[in-house]
Length: 113
Length: 114
Image (cartoon, rainbow over all chains, first blue to last red; front, side, top):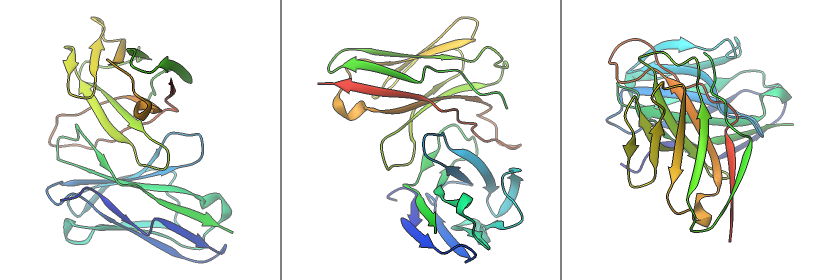
């Protein structure tokens, strides 16, 4: 296992388009997290899965955002009708059930023009 | 979801020790203290975590105050590759049930001078 993989690394999209990001966690990890990070800020929590169950969603995750983790393996984060304010780095992390050590991916940088 | 308090930035000379402070005055008895660092254009990287006792690993040491209201991350010999944003996070952990997430603050930007 080479760590947490996120694709694509960069995405430029026009306002109003839909985008989907993929995260492949470390295979032994039960938990998967999505965070969003804007320039100069720390990562902000968006949502988290334990296996295939989505257990918590942040108020930041509007109706335009949806995340899935079918079969408890990879996860996708979709943003519908993108807005300029969605421009950010989207980070995925995974951990064992105890949550004591996260492994983050390198992120997907989204630019909405 | 109270965040921790860290200085915005610090500087250190290369090959000297660095002490990065963190205040977490509202920490609960079961909260762990976690440290992560983030290099430019990368996701955060795990550094160390602890509950009550001081902890050492190959990357750093974590010194936790007796009242647990503050902690210090110690890099024993800073190198240029240690230049990063360091995040101190308090939160639950070590459980196998319930929800758990990290709440990040803005961290401390460490500059290492050659």
